Image 1: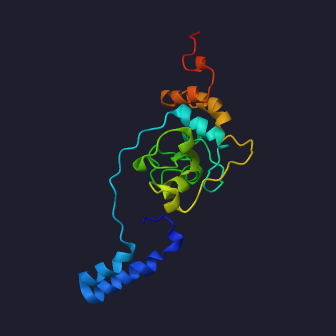
Image 2 (image 1 turned 45 degrees about the vertical axis):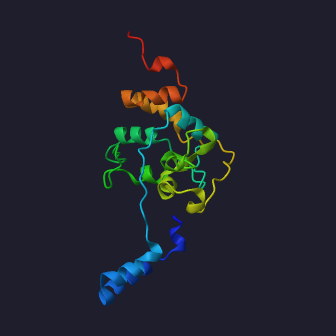
Length: 199
């Protein structure tokens, strides 16, 4: 069975044993030493995107908190706006390139995870979606909860909103970028914001 719980496996020691086997016994010995941690990739289907309105519904239900580790998360458009407004102090790259993106983005960015992965037949139904911080979402990947070794926690009562209540002011300050318009509807903001009347 595939596992993501790296704490259960001493990978450095296992890989050292593989290299030692290779040096002392060649490829066949290394292959034998590699068998206990052999990993066979599975084909990954292209992920469909979850509509913004559904994402916001999940975030609000889960109090903008990672259901796996309990950490508060921050609405990614808010961090994108901060990057636009303060590029030297809070660099933001839409592709999250290392070295040009503030570490807060990958540390606490809000994401939605499929409890049963799409590659395992999971759906976009609300009961199969949970809020997750990016580190937990990345660690879980396409693993089942059993393989991940962790079940989603019940969200705690909190007034944390992932800073989403500041979206409108930050969007206006950033010049109302068109790419962020879907979030106006998803957050149920005033629709006239999308097409302001000309003066």
